[in-house]
Amino acid sequence: MAVILTGSFQVKAQEPKSEQLVGKYEEIIQFFPEINTGTHYIEENRSLDGHPFYLSAKIELGALTIGENYFEDVPLQYDIWEDWIISFSSAFHQRMILNHLKIDSFKLNNGAFFIKKEKPNNFLFHRNGYYREVEAGEIGLYAKHRKQKKQETSTIELVRSYEEVVKYFFEIEGKLVEVPKKSKIFETLGIEKKSAKKELKALGLRYKKNRETYLRTLVNMSNNVQP
Image (cartoon, rainbow, N blue to C red; front, side, top):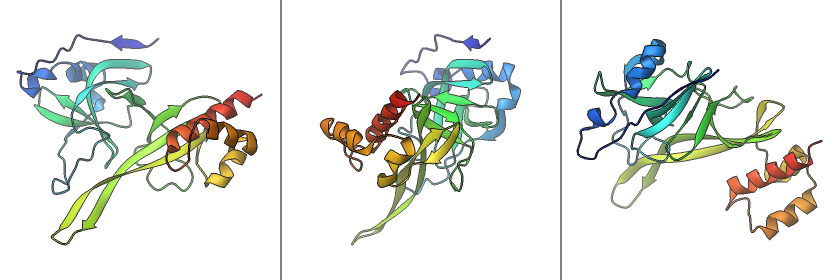
């Protein structure tokens, strides 16, 4: 039976950050002291333009699952440079790195849901193993988000910034398989190419322009024809 911990966790703009985020981190620590790695989070690449987080550099309320235990209203950030989940400790007045070995899944403020998966064959950037769930079903669709350094040379100076990279995977028979080149996708999903392309065209979807929606649509087609 899942344990659900919730709280009002109201945030007031005039309060300092340590007061805004007080309580929930310590509440989890009481149940799972091993969730604390004991390491303060420090953003290392401050010289790079941008930030190493998924979508936003702001720490906001989310949720996480540890085994069968579900915690809501947890202050969370997701560093996709290191594949780290970050929370805020009012006791230390610091952002803390959470223990990825204990966290099975987490959900961010914007609704993005990340779940731990086994390493796909020959994939070099698995890191701590969190993948965003795009579509679940007999066949699933998942995305791995990461950031890398991008260098752009201008006539004035060398600009260094973060660049986000997204890799998509099908989940087939419980295992993640990297989405193949476009010509092999239909065969991999077991759907008829001609009719699928006709439906994609009617929806105005193109692989390069609408990749995630394109792939999700094909996964749904495949799940609808599964015996």
